[in-house]
Length: 123
Image 1 (cartoon, one colour):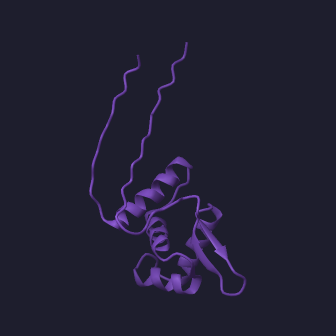
Image 2 (cartoon, one colour; image 1 turned 90 degrees about the vertical axis):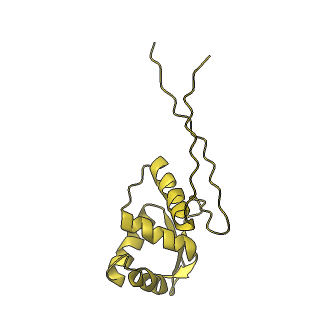
Image 3 (cartoon, rainbow, N blue to C red; image 1 turned 135 degrees about the vertical axis):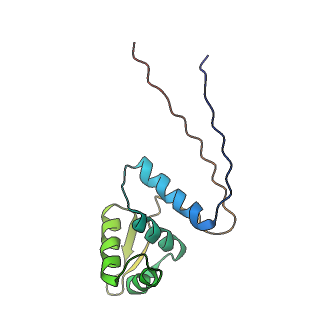
């Protein structure tokens, strides 16, 4: 019979931290590296889903996540290349967080992850 070392943690956090945790978990298991500024940007995008790019760039520069709209656009392009967000539209493009991330952003969110770290045995 296998022995399983179980770790059970219960933490109450803000909705922002819960959103960031969901994004970080997706990035971790998909081997995607992001900076803390990129994480803040994606968190704001999760809360402002399907927003046009100029308006979103203004939001994240007003929040001092990035210093200029151009650096915000660069971060958006970088996130799109990593399949973390989706651009839609032709002239006035809108962006939204990738549906693959499956982030819950409204109401009371309970995250219940069950992760089994299996040690491989060589014979």
